[in-house]
Length: 397
Ligand code: NIG
Ligand code: FE
Image 1 (cartoon, rainbow, N blue to C red):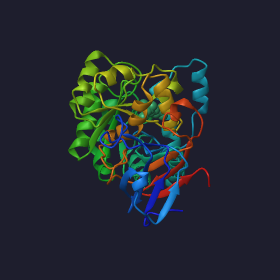
Image 2: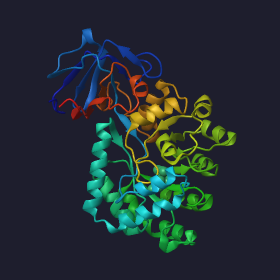
Image 3: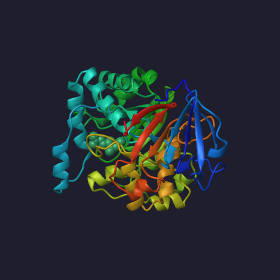
Image 4: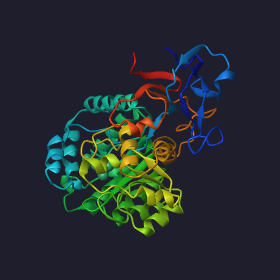
């Protein structure tokens, strides 16, 4: 088995996705007959297989597709319990409301750190098996300074991309007093958690936080060196998208209801629109108008939004299939959004593509081309996953 200290040449690749338009065809930079060399945790060489340099190990992909590992830029893995009954009720006609989050807050507060860590480990492992090699993870089911801090520390054991979802929903002890909750978040929670997280997030939505409350939280995070991301426009049109753009947020996530003005604002900005179609699928919500966003030139990422309420899946292959079938994205757009798009949403240029110098994070499909991700929905096609040049998941083993 290749390890990170040995160089590896991957050869006999069916279709290679580099996401480098200079290296191959189209936005995905697709190449045929290529080989890739991993060395020291990075991509050391990409070129025609006939010219591949020697390496310590050789992996024959037998015509399988090789892609950059998926970059999951939106997940909520620090939680306890589950909400299958709420899902069943929803499927019988009950509408999703932000308040369901409080059920998970109660279970999470009651769990100890090791229980929370075991849950994160289980879902991180699941993510890797479906091809995600970078996974962002949010807090948000503590909603006290102590519980958000321990959530951040638990998440930080598994990823560098930790987001403080400081204002997810006003917790029960602040019922009817969202302003007082926001004041506590800005005064106590953000200063205590900021050294342990990279991003600040807020749920700007009816039933959660208003534009003013959301802005106060995001600005307090910025004052402590954090970069904003926003949950916005999930359940209805609202101020989330424009707030995100105004504050220079890295992403605004969900974006299922947008106006022409929202699209214009996004198109002229560096804020990525992160679409989470599995959440819309699991809540019978409207899907985002991905075509309008893409055609206006907005940068689009795809995330799975794994959480126990609206989207209990870690599968980006499933999201790619939804994006193609339901959001009318092309297979190329969907694959780009789940790899390079996720990297843009996390402001990373070392992941999401396979060019010389990129992280050696990749996946091989049990199929000759990336097209099969949408063409064969629900089939576990991800066969091998490498992270930093190491084989971290192998369905054939
Ligand atoms: O991304 N929208 C807010 N947060 C989660 C849902 C959380 C929950 O219902 O537990 C989301 O969909
Ligand atoms: Fe979310």
